[in-house]
Image 1 (spheres, rainbow, N blue to C red):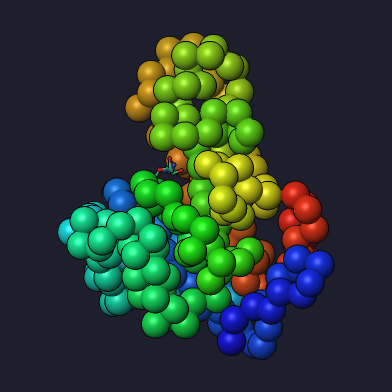
Image 2: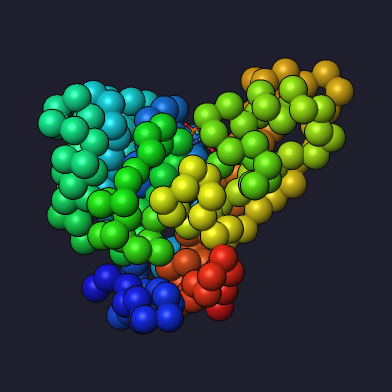
Length: 215
Ligand code: GAR
């Protein structure tokens, strides 16, 4: 059963566990793998993994775990709105309670978000609101920050701008390049994502303005 949203903007998963989670990814899928490998008893089940590409390593990881996969490519649709609709329909077909963007390299639009209000989270490799966008580790290095990190947030119509669920700080080493820094961030990001998905599916949560309140 999907979460309910009251007029004050409060979203909460209704019904009993496990919650159904659909993960979207475009790349190597190490964040997905962290969710798959978490040995703790889970209040959620990953029911499908989707991509915007023909295929990707993340889908290989899903197949190896016996999880359903799907591909929804922008170029197979008349426009972005039609792609958003098709993507949302593919996710709804799996009964998703929560949608996890884990290295998904496309922006989802308002038509998509309306169908999953407060139920789409994204992992981002910086301490938002610093360094939004596709080059966060490179931007952090270029700025010379000593500490960066990772954020999991509820996706809204902005770019990396939605209410923050949780964050972890990661130090920048003097000899870091983009690869070493991003890899160190991803170590923290995997733990963060597992903790956030567990928290959001274990108990109802509320969203008031920019505040996400976990129980
Ligand atoms: C992660 O660092 C994630 O935050 C980032 O891609 C990486 C995916 O890693 N996503 C974005 O930058 C989205 N704007 P993975 O493919 O190894 O899971």
